[in-house]
Length: 428
Image (cartoon, rainbow, N blue to C red):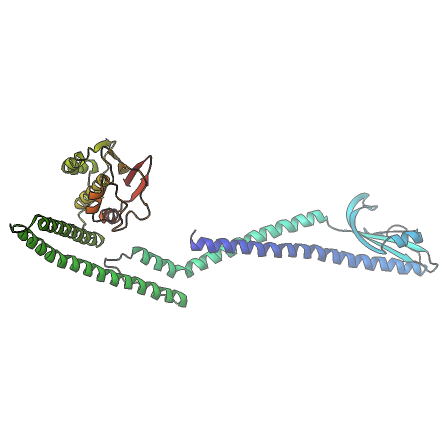
């Protein structure tokens, strides 16, 4: 969820809770205020009647010519003890002048006359229908609630959107920043102190990474070039020494092992240099490459190697997979994957090549899965089986790292899985 949406959702929730609380408070306060005003009128009405009654003045029996009504009756001492002397209630009463029932507020008042006799006086006054009043107030509050909520959210979202503009600008700059390439300087002016500090921290961090990358690239390239010359010179001297007829068989064997080690070192050096060039983006001659066709060309060179271990190659060209990639990188990637399949296949096993419009896969038989989390790391080796330990020993351990670097450079994805006792590498 985006930051703007997260903040807006929280504001919406909190604002709704606050508005709901105050809406309920307003509703009950309004109803209570209406009752208070009516109750004050009823109290004055009841007191006037009681005063006239105690003074012995004549009192109309039912009403005084208005919709306000009263009823009075003597009650027993027991009744007076069991009931509160002042009670308020809402009920329908019969209005004689209108000859109908209407909702009214009723005050029941128990008092004692000069002779000690208890009387119960009920005075009532019609009022508006409280159900209608509650409904009207409720709908008014709901409308006000919705309008306020939408207004607050609209203002909040607009304010947050404007406030977060420097952050969005910074994120776009970070997304477009590419280590090893020329990048535009950060142009993100803001008056917010925290955003200015964030701009400075992020820009300095990425620039440090850029500088370290350039130093690493320069060191790796220089070291690889510098190593290649002494390695070649040393191999030449050892080959010259092999022509010495005075060497014993054991000495010649040791020289051959030394030459073989130097060849591996030279191959590793070339692989590291190639990995550096790939990561530096030096292969930009991209075009659509037909993977099945390129695989056929590579297999023509590798089939004798596969035949030496009686490894069968099965092809399932359902549809051509034609990604946009540098042809040199594509050949290097497929060669490494085919070599990897050979190294990890036992004698008499099979390698299956599958192509369709969405991807390309290479599968070979295996006994146990490889570590999917580390298999693409440079110099990572699984334990070699007796049938392939020579090939595993000769491997530089950087082939799959090259494959991943090529896929990353070309906008492709490579993943590994182990299904039905088969190692499967998929490119898509």
